[in-house]
Length: 364
Image 1 (cartoon, rainbow, N blue to C red):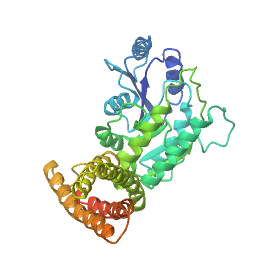
Image 2: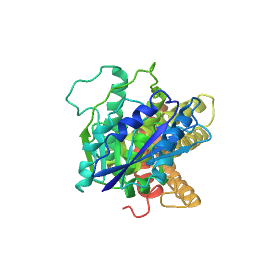
Image 3: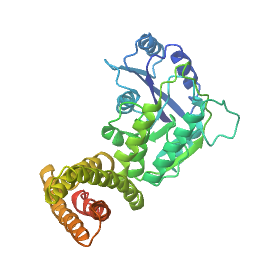
Image 4: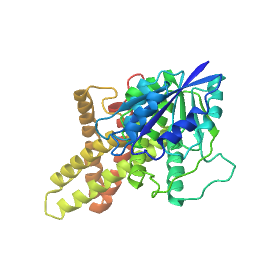
């Protein structure tokens, strides 16, 4: 017999908590026994007391409580590290998902075909409730972007139903940092980076409206976009890294040009205008690289990384300065000369940052 641990994050779910526990208990079979880990995220209603009552009545239920509201991701981390089952999955406390679908999700694990199984709402061929176009559009868009940066081919990254071998999720859990719905892309990135075997199964889905208590919103979508890039870009396929660096380099180049033109039009000398504009754009570039693309201190210590970055500044600063002066001497306008040298800088900076400044230990 194998044990399936389901982590149930709870936040103001007094209306549905007992019902969902009763539904989950129905999937226990002679082959699979259950462990339910309820994590109350400082609910302001009676959810925690209901959870305690359930635990008193049902031996396989554990209850944990956060003293302050931290978010779904934080509740899941608590649950993952407290679960003891052979397999660990996620069950929301609302009634959007059908627990019996776990009997399908667990099959690839029992047959040792998979290490991780996702339940996809978009593989389901049956009837479904129609709700929010933009919510679905956001989900599918984020899934597409996740696939592009992880080289996976999943259809529903934002799904609640994710099932892991215990050793897989308890290896990943200490790395997790996202406290809200950023958990979904973050954990997917770590699954991809771990090169685990991933399966997908169709599941049923009965979405709630916002009036019925749905909590995810537009800001969570923006956070998910950030998480995909911040956690996944440094191991993404090279073309995706370069496309992202074009965005970073483009912002830096625009800043370089605008600052240069502002200074030169303020009657500052060409020498100082070029140098100051380049330095400020380089600082912008560095922080955007850390924020969105490369791993900070991946190969060097902090001091080593700073020193290596300074070396690249000297190299690309010389290139930028020489190109700008040379093109102006050839009769190119100030704007045109700076634009051309900035494009050269984008390519050179990407190569130097990837293969020198942010080169990861053990990576070629």
